[in-house]
Length: 142
Image 1 (cartoon, rainbow, N blue to C red):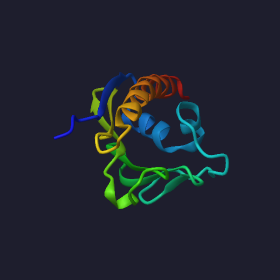
Image 2 (image 1 turned 180 degrees about the vertical axis):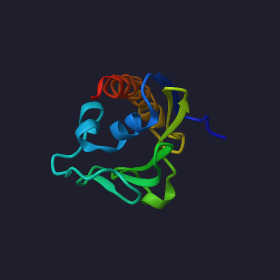
Image 3 (image 1 turned 90 degrees about the horizontal axis):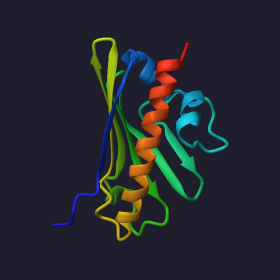
Image 4 (image 1 turned 90 degrees about the vertical axis):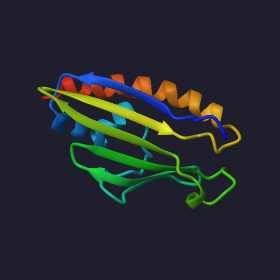
C-alpha cells in the first residue's frame, strides 16, 4: 500500500466561526489567501460551484456545510485518468472554541499520483501560508 500523502494542518483563530467561514467562501477574501482565475466572478462558494483554470486545474465544491465544512475536489488536466478516478481534495473543517475557531485543513491524498510527493510538498507550503492569511483576515476583518 502506498504511503499516505495527505497534508494535515490546523490553526486557532481568535474570531467567531461565522467570520472564518466568510473568509473561506467569499471571493474578495479568497483572492487574498489563494489564487482564483481572472474570470471568476464574485459568487460565494456553494455546493457544486466550480473554480476552473481553463485547461489546467479544476476545483469543485463537493461539500458545503455553513460554518462547519468546505470540501473541494481537485483535478489537474495532465493527470492520466478521468476526474472520477481520483479522490484528491481540499477539506476545511471549522469548530467553535468559545469565542475562537479551530480551522483544520486536509489536502490530498496524493499517493495515487506518480509525482505525488511533489504535490504533497507544495501543499504543505500552501497550507501553512493559507492558514496564516485566513487567520489574519478573520481576526482583522471589520
